Length: 275
DNA sequence: CTTGCCCCCTGCACGC
DNA sequence: TGCGTGCAGGGGGCAA
Image (cartoon, rainbow, N blue to C red; front, top):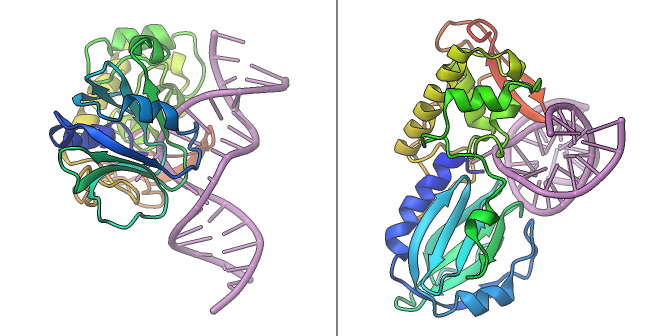
């Protein structure tokens, strides 16, 4: 998936295109995503409703409507959300089309090859804060701090990479950026969480903000499936310094980058400068 | 409570 | 060429 930066890029791209617009016709593929597509709720709440806000929470994209309902999208591993001319033939794995009322030549499409994504409708009686209650703080906001991480991780022995990828701890850090952040902070992904020092937590916080901010500025880093809100490939890729570079020399110290499996996910680290 | 394991699904690169 | 295998950016359920 798209990790936080990619979702943020989609969010910023879609916001000006959707604000003030209304949806009319709604079509679904009939396929279930990670959750079934709530077709009835979409027809009831999204049809003829105007978009008043487009924002991101973690890796979720929230489209708020003027009837107080919200559409909550998660892109999973291969999800894409973009505006396309309505005349564009349906692509394989297009699962939802929302036609824009006041510009019927265009429609919002959700495409997801692997169907690990999700689409949910939050009705006006459902509290969004409650819906996202299990999510940790945003890494680009103040609540995410060295003190917070030290407190949260003080009694955990799991590898620090797994800790950073736990959305209950902090949202938005996925498999690519977890490796990149720990490389920047010179800390091994394998380090037990309760053996990270206060100074190192500070470094992790600093590097998390730095890496994510740079990735957003670069337009999201793309491997294969991310397409920006306009439907064009995200050409502007943040240079990844460890992810996918196993067998190559570290760009910082020249030692070897190695690849290991951690919690079932590929993990990259430099043997020389990460301890 | 924490932690690792397995699963959901499709497509692609690779080796034989 | 064709087929089998492993792997891919997420995350939730489950059992130990």
